[in-house]
Image 1 (cartoon, rainbow, N blue to C red):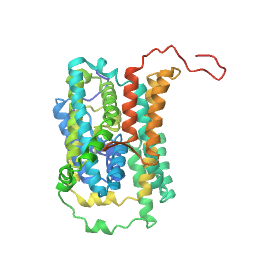
Image 2: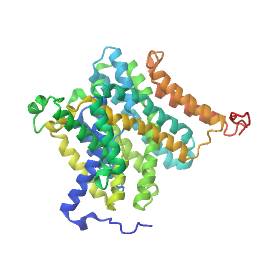
Image 3: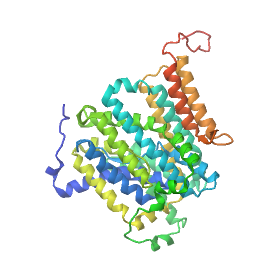
Image 4: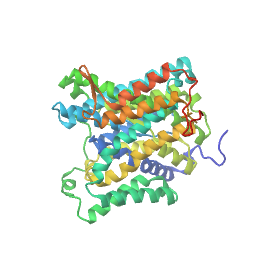
Length: 438
């Protein structure tokens, strides 16, 4: 059933209003999308370019019917950080280490194709039983906690700017109205950045040197550089460290498809089909990673804009994608973003990383995972302890022969394996403090 008072054909509004709606979607995704390259060290212009291209590819594969925008995924931040540290420890530059991370993310994008094929062949219910909330929830929680250390390190460079960013984000999100409520991250960045500029904390000299127009793609910033370097051991380590994260992002994609379907009032999981939307997301991620951009994912922020405006025409989303592509060809704009103080990034990322973990907790609560069951406790506990313990241990990863596995990779593998082999009913419950079984 279609929602009441919905406007499906945005062309009835006229070109000027369609453009305004497209700009609004651009703002909704902008703060989070550009924050990922700032946190990882990837290029802002390339990120914007392939957010736009990835969105258009997704729309093409999903028959132009699904009003979804694909922006930078935060789920892979732990993978980027882990591989960068691994590569630098082996004598690589940070840039080349990030190219190796992009190879791992591109392979993770291929997991979407595998999942799409399985969904097409066996149906969604049979596949999802291997990735229940008791596995994906703790993995998402661990992703946020693993990243928390880097946020604190950035905040410590200037706590005043970090706190200003945090307060702005919370204020806009909780008390904001209209578009203010939709773009709290962007506002947090802007207010903190402007404050830093007023206090003389930003050197704008590089901004004057940057060109207004430029091509954002460079050969040495693609995964071709990885094959030229030829470190097979690091390639395998990277792939095994990052690919398991795809299980969490696939679950995120499915959740987003449910959310968009509910908002619009159309069952997109049936038409054009989950297998098509998964394929579109996978293609967008693989293509972006090949050229040195972050992994893409469907954005809940833009779903919020859909709900606010009641304009569900996918053409408006495609306008936002084209605007993102145009911005990618302006190096001066990218330079302005890259001059942002580390403390500003730290303040915003502190909230975002916490929200990642909170999403995992919400997943456990909403799906009513029985944490009185010792089986579920064992699965969740090992995922959390392995992910966090390995990350903050002495070596930051575990070597298995020539391959180095990150904590997140080990946690995901162990969690999926345990969930698969342990019977659902063990006949054993966790005891309360009074000694009574529940």
